Length: 193
Image (cartoon, helix red, strand yellow):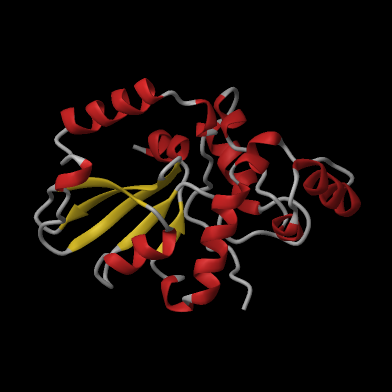
């Protein structure tokens, strides 16, 4: 069971390793200022309808909207825990590449770049190839991709490889989630709003 890509939009994530504690606190304050509940007080009210998900240093940030249109936000340690905790009807838009190719670019990345145009198309980076998930170092990931495509892996893609691997494994372990977990890209979402 390899999970193949179902395109909604293509995902990217900024590398959070350089974030300071002050940056994390500022982000939390912005979230609370937007009407989100604090991490310790999160309780999804109503049946969750949709959840936006992005990787973060503590695991996964999830912002869920219930059927009553109230928002809640929190950080969950693992992707499996996150999907498993919310009701079965919840749809998850995840800002991470899903459905990795064995070689070559994904059609969804080309479509997203075309939709965004220059210069915003630069926010769409190429997803790693499935064989790169086995890499234990940046150099090894680059060697694997170079053998297949004659190109090295970007540092940005390698920086989120553990998160990509985590989602990939979760979807293989829970094939029933595939219809509810879709890849999204913030820039594409903003462009079509």
